[in-house]
Image (cartoon, rainbow, N blue to C red; front, side):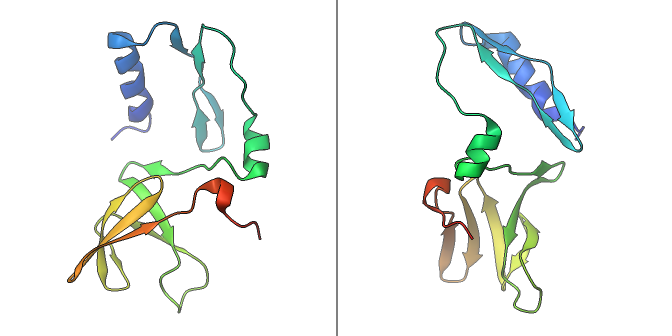
Length: 126
């Protein structure tokens, strides 16, 4: 999968059936992160800058590579901190079968175990 495949899919979707007034701005890259702004030509809306949202704990950046989504899980007591897992990996003996923006699902013999992430607004700051 090409590095820009996701934005190409978004551009293709917008070219075929974009909601009225939606357009993409030019991509902005910083290091390995590329942001593509999405604009709406309608009435202005209130928003907060990313830096403000990040400081308030209401924004989060999730990495999705060519192999798909990854999850940071602190599952191995022998390794300090969290480890990176992908769909198909074993986490504490259970197969990781799904990763979303707010949960991971592990397949256990007794049935699926869904681990949910607290909404950013409710997370405790260190």
